[in-house]
Length: 294
Image (cartoon, rainbow, N blue to C red):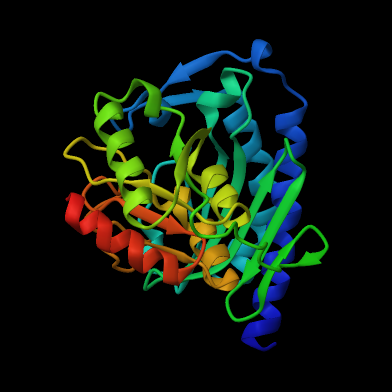
């Protein structure tokens, strides 16, 4: 079997797994869920975990576990310990059973299932995201394009320059000690790029925020570098990195470098930050402004 056919088949399994996880998530309401806390980054969003995360993961692994042996794949998932096999196998599944657990527990949108297949060198080959609130299934395969539900991706028309620029930020933005500074920086950035106004959308998890960037141009999702541990991990950005790649959009770190999605030296992105933009030309302007701010 050729690589393209094999990737297509694995993408179908990932879609099946994501939809199964979505059914688990939608069977719960926020009030039914007991919240626990785990070791993670410095933010509450990176420490919250629920039985829904765990059952969502179980639903995903029920579908994908057989592919570990049949295709000699490794596994990295947020709710299990990293066994290091991602450095030994040619490819590994990278799974976030429910990105945006915090907004889920608050009864707010902004959560999604994310499944990526990543090559050992860190290149994302498959990206699948399911948003159970909007019932949108994103499916991207390297070199094969992006589909949302049954439709092949077509970029939406951006609002004309001089109108509005959208910034998407995580649900923890409101409690961030640098919120006011970052707000002023984003507003100034939009003005210097020629937009009459800017809107800051406090949205939820990294996965959901990135998907909204793709579908609401001109827009960006940015997470500046910071000294504290956190800033998202491989499972937060693996699937959307592939989706953005196939959409012709932009997903890089804060300095414009390739996202390291299989590093042996870090599991989080606080050291380098991230920048997702709705198109590469726009990203060049955003990155230039970010360098000035930094």
